[in-house]
Length: 83
Length: 83
Image (cartoon, rainbow over all chains, first blue to last red; front, side, top):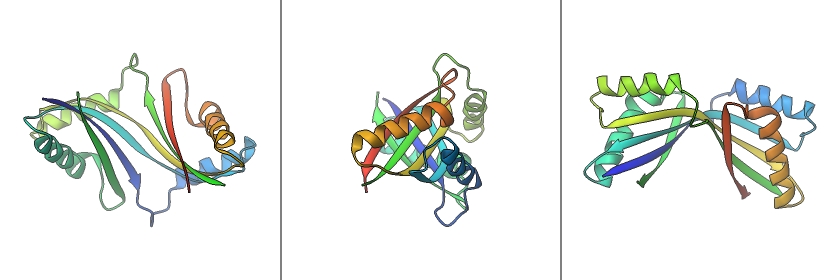
């Protein structure tokens, strides 16, 4: 079976996001002062071959914990869909 | 009314994603050779004050087109939820 995972990796709430802060400031210059609290993370899509949905889940979580996400500063969420 | 937007900005399919390619290669070293086709983009969350859902939509699209997304190389999708 082939699955597609869509992973979101965001800076933890407690951690300052300087890139997001800069973008929030730029919104004002664009005339979009109604936009605030911008936070910027990563969106990652990938394909997994696995025998079951559970096996695919395990692989995605391993990839997130060991490679994609720095859990000291970031948290991840993901969605898995069968292709 | 206050809305939260979750925006995904991804490199266009036709465009090479060298960061994603490098990560696909690293998956093999991690013992995750079943993972392929990694593509890496941005995930952005923000808060919008707007009179209606339609107004919020317009503002998010303006922000994406004029600031967040380089439409020559990237495409965006978003979800809007009322807070």
